Image (cartoon, rainbow, N blue to C red; front, top):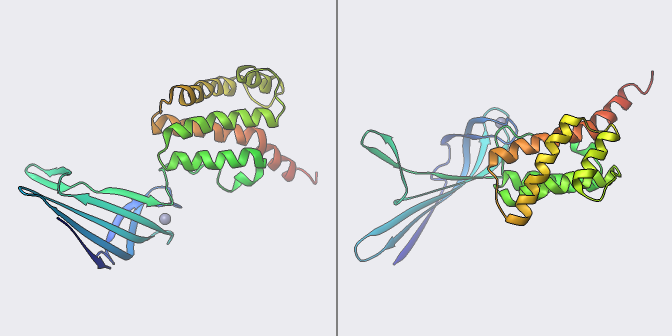
Length: 227
Ligand SMILES: [Zn+2]
């Protein structure tokens, strides 16, 4: 037998520490509104209980409002003391976010539309914990930049080297892109996901590439235009 009970604002006013979208670190958030579901499934010799809290939350630093879903159940526990167990909280935040990953922020408008679309999607995939799609997206960004800059060569390896010849990329940067190229290959052909840490570093490299190729040249041009 399955029962669900729904309460409103049961967790309203509570304070939690979670990752803020704007502050890019864990901050105190207050729960402004909540819908709180309590479920119970009865079996002949045992019960399964679960709680799901849907909450509108607000950062107490920057006041940014976002959404949190916190789920826990009677089967998954974590040890908090020597003989003390507590239900493990599974937290999902919307929009999704990843600590230390601000990306190129508003500078995204300085990159060409073709690159921008795939960059935004890949960034969202990374933050939504979709590692296979992130790997494929990273390769697609490198390919799109090569195409947009009319890199020469009949494969991606040669095209990346051609960006060095065009003085758009340093040899060190090319070396890293070759690693990302292999990473994209593995994601696409072996459907092998990489760790979030690896992918996050790979996206940092992409950010540097976009800074060097598009954003800094634009800023330099704008700043020195009058001289
Ligand atoms: Zn904040």
